[in-house]
Image (cartoon, rainbow, N blue to C red; front, side, top):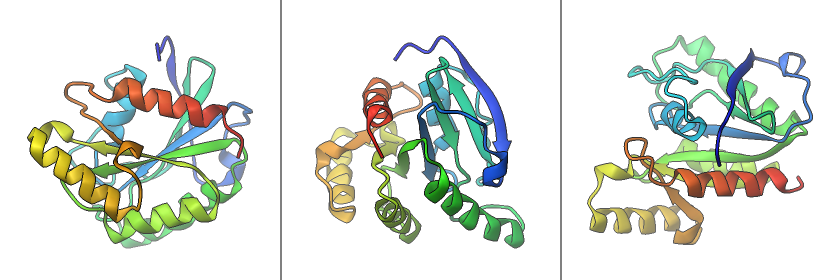
Length: 196
């Protein structure tokens, strides 16, 4: 995918805040500190379209980004550990669930997992939530540059077993080298063209 234009549209909390648009949307979700912002930045070809931080849990709203006027990428708050007030963290679950169940032009979700770790309870819950809402997931495995080739093969197989999917349905990715960028874009465009 050649990205000519990548622009922030707006942030939202509730459906009345969502942008009025008929463009297909692909949302990104994952545990805090899994590399979500870096993945979106590499996909968009912009170093700071999404603010990255060494502090987990910086995304506290639903953020919408226009890509080439053809597709909208949606950055959802990370779940799990986050240095944010507990009352704010409690709002994120309902905020994410409402978006996933209510947004008609949502075509799929990129569920981001750290290749070095087995999926957490939160990851499995998110996968279940997507299945319940009949939203097709694309499973991106970030930080693959941090493993040797043999470790990587072993981890992909272990994660595939944990999420009950074939190895080929997982998308290894490196924000450092950009490895996996084109394959993830292909998966995104396939989802964007599909019916929900």
